[in-house]
Image (cartoon, rainbow, N blue to C red):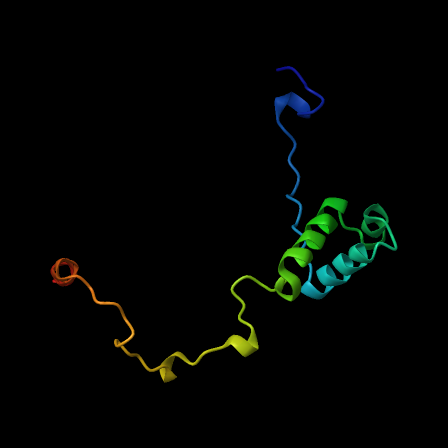
Length: 112
């Protein structure tokens, strides 16, 4: 069998462990994005200082501009001031629009 430089000996591809994905804290993302918005340093300089790719800094900067304070919250995380006690909710059908009889018939048939 032939030997290929990129595949190592006997055509068997050498493998390495996959790189770990970096996870940055929201505070760090916000700090870097705010510094990028200030314009005191270029994105390339900030990338070198913080060890982050310039494209990542640009993404964080755009997220901060688009979403403001909620830009870097964890997905699925709820803000404390928006929490609702579901058990304490009162349900009222008075404010619901009327449902046509045909649809009611279809719903009742589907529930059987």
